[in-house]
Amino acid sequence: MMLFTSIAIGSVIYSLAAVVALHCLNTGYDAISQPLSYHAVGAYGWLMASALGAFAVSALTLAFNLERGAARVSRAGIAFLFGAGACLVIASIFPTDVTANNLPITVAGAIHVAASYLASPCLVAAALLLSRRFDDARRRDAARFALALASWASLVVLVIVNHLDLHVGGIGQRVFLALIALWLLLTAFRVPQST
Image 1 (cartoon, helix red, strand yellow):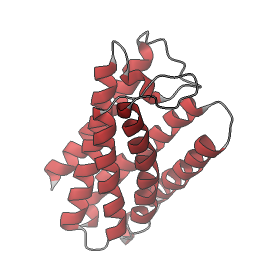
Image 2 (tube, rainbow, N blue to C red):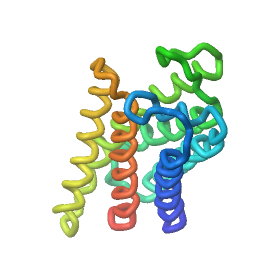
Image 3 (cartoon, rainbow, N blue to C red):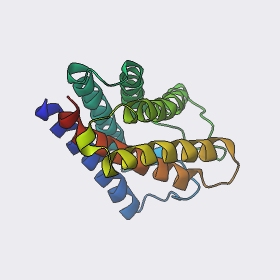
């Protein structure tokens, strides 16, 4: 089980490092208003695709680890985490389309957008359902609060980004990614204690 925990943690760290690296490179995209997935198109597309793939690996290995050993966790939460991982695999394979209105114009772009739009609520649902089940008395305090805070904050960011026309979708996605990455890391570190 420690192998899956290590893979989940390493994958999240790689994904975050790759996204940070993309923002240090001259990709020509605006981090505030343009979707993170735009980085999958262009000279550094491979780096964004690998970041999405690593994020998928993290979600899938964490879900597998939770399913194998934690009797107290939400089965629905695990299913949502598996679903998110599968959607992220698809999003990493099919690049998005870079358009003025962020709407896809190719089949690959439509698949990417659909997979991304499904992955986000699956990640939030998994975070909300799984976070409330880590109930061991030894570690209830700060770690449990951080899990719940990351879960609820990611939900708020998701709603703001997807339903309010603030033209900050790019930064909203990056905040959402950071919150979910934090949740994945905190959860991965807690798995051995919860089994």
